Length: 106
Image (cartoon, rainbow, N blue to C red; front, side, top):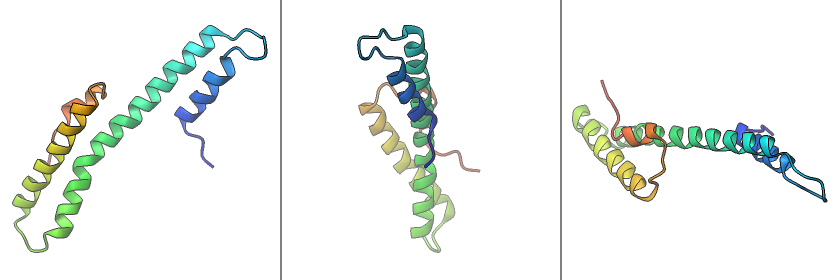
């Protein structure tokens, strides 16, 4: 089983909390919480960046023999709609997610 950085940060937060009458360590707790926020934010941004690629791949599979430029436009529209909807419900998304609206296709 692979232990991811955000999972390790959760264990770190738990480790530095007060327990059984013993005081916790505030600075360790704070550092682990900052690490937790940083690592989950990076994961969230990665997910948002995958959305345009996923829609492009789906449209390419469905469009056997169709115009490639139209397929890219359709995928860009769908991914932009999903990202806009996600932004509406997730206003605290990382700035890297807020900039990505459609895939940059060459």
